[in-house]
Length: 230
Ligand SMILES: [Fe+2]
Image (tube, rainbow, N blue to C red; front, top):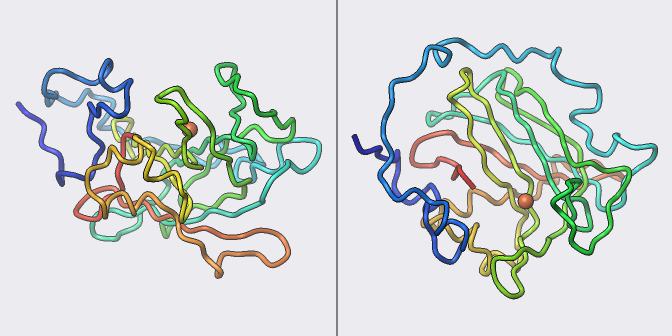
């Protein structure tokens, strides 16, 4: 049986030639709908016990403050009707302010920051809201094409209430000049859907003297769904 996307154009193309590696790894056959295994019918119990004290403050993982622009990111995880998705495990990972990941496979010529590892996690509250403090990530080069640089972004993973409900996406920052040149961002066909990947600056969330605020809501389904699979 062919799998029909909820709304065409919102999810990225699985094979998008401008994004070179998708040509080799993208599926050549249509997706199959499978019977859900038994564990998907059991609720995930991701209780507060899995959270470490500084999981929502990525600037607090070292001996002192990391370098870069301190920011706070918050938003709501909602379903297609705008109802909150409560108690959802949200994990984030990102590069440091110089655009380098704390990962052995990232060896590009930018410095690591001993005070910034770029990993966080949290649970949404009763209003579906998450919030974390971090450093604005830098853009970084990659091997897709000559002069290929990723726009600054934060990776998100969301678990729903069962293990089969895992979604990943990327959050971007407003007015990034690299959007037009980034095949990952451009692999989402629908222009309005691409815009939903971009956080918005929020004076309301900004903390005076400390950090700028950004809001990024995540809609899981429907016409206004946030693109996933990036
Ligand atoms: Fe990345």
